[in-house]
Image (tube, rainbow, N blue to C red; front, side, top):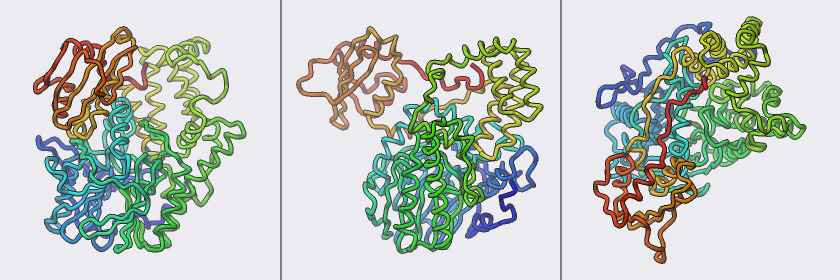
Length: 603
């Protein structure tokens, strides 16, 4: 900690610069009165750092908790601290262009209302999604009327809709369960619990929506004019998201960096789960942004954290962000080519002093450790090359054998307490985890593991590490607390028919469906599209129907909304049929419901 300049208040000055007004109280509720956002719950951060929180993470959380409408530069404003992400508002000739409408409809509407209270009742004349993560599109219906989105240009990078769905739907149940740990959703907001995620405080819990874009950005250098405002785009696929873009406002001398350069070391692979990102191209796109825009930029802002003002400061910030991803990438490759594994490289990796001492390169959300492992995974996969690791037992069976080899649960518990007493919490957690997985009814082991995870969490500089450790400790003590979760109607409305069919295929219980052979044609009267779905050998596949196709076992005639109703359990109202309706029942009978509350710290 000695290399960090805690006396430097520049970040605090920048985070507070341009404050126009705050939402008071800092609470947002849904139509039923349920609180979906409570920024005031983090008021405890005004005090000194307690022993239960890493001082560097405490400082970051103090900065992220600042809330209100801020002027970035002439005609550009941000609402910060009303969700995990920022909403940016750019004033045009007639109205206002909104960039990234937060996570929830309710917080987006509250942010827009706060802006209008201070800047007048300007209509929304454009909506821009910087990338395909839910905290940058989920509040769309709080900004644009869902029943008339075509009246507003909605811009997004090419591939946005495909990736938004694949990340939030296909593996959505497992990712959402892991996100409960990642974001510390169930932890109390206090110095012993959740103090922030490093990227922002937390995500709101309101209704998520998705309005598809109606104008794609397909190339770097593409220019668009929205409400008299000229915007120059830079596509950055494969960086922080598979579909992402930076963009520049030449007349305002302002650069939006999406989530490609924020005030922390980001994730190459999130702990909640995602596609592994490419640190190499991430670095190169940041370098390209310097070349394209730096000399014409006086302020750079992003969809998290606070802006950077001044050309030289912007270049230094972007150069260091560029270098940290390049360094992690290149050094990981150098060391793996010397035969080191991902786990070994993570322990060996040390950032250069100039990067290690830069507040914005600290591992508040990502970390050097898990980013190095992700880079290794991108190139080498899960297998480290050691044949002893090729076919290991799964966790329960392996743990039972480890505990037996070490002399039984009581012996392992005693050893773990010794390691914990010596300060080796990492190995204590490993030993205790084996006891818990070998004997999940061993309350002494669960309690001891919870205590060790608690201590690991309290010492973590990374907000998501802290949340994982503390949530694990909580579930060991209290059990899994079921949390209702589903894809909201607003999110589902953004899915294409093909994506809905893909989601159905993921739910087919393969062994149960081995001997089923069926064909269904889906005829959509509202779009004129026809699809053929076939189930054979436990695999559900679909394609566009062809004129020469033989008759299907069942043909359904319906609209796209009726498809959502049918799969949502609302029955066959509005669905016409020809053929054997039992075919549909046979298909639904082999589809599993996902398990949203699966255990993580116990078997």
